[in-house]
Image (cartoon, rainbow, N blue to C red; front, side, top):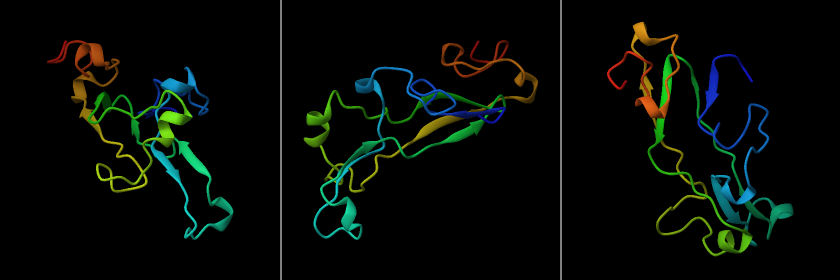
Length: 127
């Protein structure tokens, strides 16, 4: 990884992109099966259920207190196939990746911000 750059997916993937937990617990940002009218004929009927959308931020200037919309994960392929995108609830072939980022006060940069301390480094308002 790049020093100081963090991913909103660090809880599930390490800096090389390798999964750190069980496959069923890993978030996905797309869950689709291409139909016969796809402009990518080689991918017709392929089930694409994986994480391909990312948000990176620089620490310690910014902290990630939480995902505004919880990450989507499926217990298994059957569960994913039962809820394909796009849908009426998500009219895109990608789930939204929305996070709240907290701008750290200049005096607090240098201490680690965590969800446990409200996204603020020690000594800040959330401590």
